[in-house]
Length: 91
Image 1: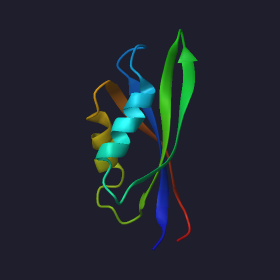
Image 2 (image 1 turned 60 degrees about the vertical axis):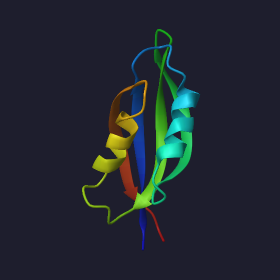
Image 3 (image 1 turned 90 degrees about the vertical axis):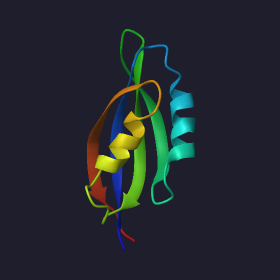
Image 4 (image 1 turned 90 degrees about the horizontal axis):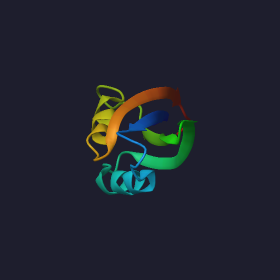
C-alpha cells in the first residue's frame, strides 16, 4: 500500500517556544502508523521561526490529515498547524 507524505507548518505560541522540544514531544506521542521523516526550522520574521514537519502516513487514514493536525496542535507551545502539502509516494 502506498503512503502519503504530509508537510505541516507548525506555528509556535511565541518566539520563546523551544522548537526542538516540540519535535521531541511529537516523536513521543505520534502513533506508530505515522513516521516523522524530517523537521526543519524556517525563519519567518522578527526572530520568529516555524517548524516544517515531513510526516509519512498511510493513504487510507480516514479524515486525511485531521488526526495528525490535532495531535500536533495538542502539543504545548503550538499555536496553529497548517497542511502545506500532501503527496502520494510509492509503497
